[in-house]
Length: 107
Image (cartoon, rainbow, N blue to C red; front, side):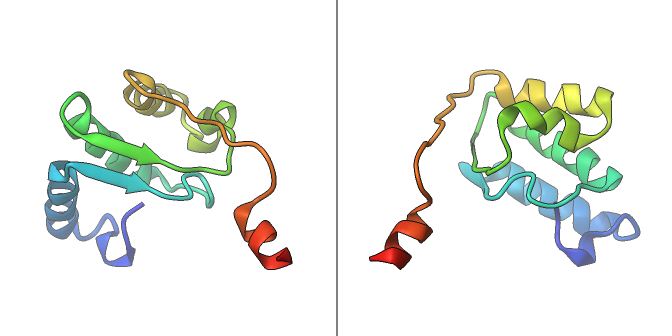
């Protein structure tokens, strides 16, 4: 989830960045679930969402169906906790049809 310098060995930078992200009025997680997630990234995501739930807005875009998010998170207990924070009070918009990239490319 966080960029390369925020690997588990760099806890100070990780904590600072997580705190900054937690304070944003709107956090956009684009292409959620597009690549595998590491164990430390799951923990960071849970911490970040826990800090934001009920106080800040989070917008998530994904090509991965919501029904597949639990399996993608790959660790049942953390997946339950993360998804509970995402789903609680959320609004889901499922888009249908061709990709805008395909449509504009064809035009």
